[in-house]
Figure (tube, rainbow, N blue to C red):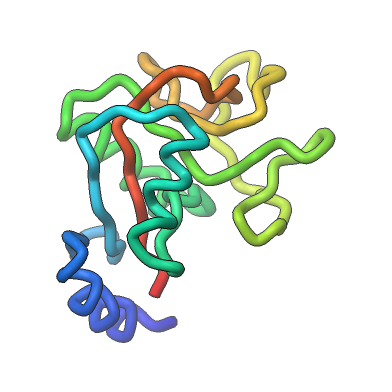
Length: 138
């Protein structure tokens, strides 16, 4: 989708509380209530079939995730991605190839999240509760 069509789709999702970030060209919704990884994924998908946890697949998406974490003074958020063997896959089963790993990562965890101090990515058990960042993919 083009930026214009994503922005247009985001205005429809606005009724669900989604907002358009013009700097990063991302339609998103931030939930301050904290959920574990499985609950976070379900929360986003319950908004709309086109809503998912943020997929960090570029510098732009990574920088947006860091922006949300810093702006909201939170420690961490879950990101789209689940371990499948030695790889991580997105919600459609596609292998994720873009990462900004923290030192020593990926660990043995099944889920992806931002690391508390560095804001880089790490593998997590998914059991800790964090605020939720959903992206509307239109």
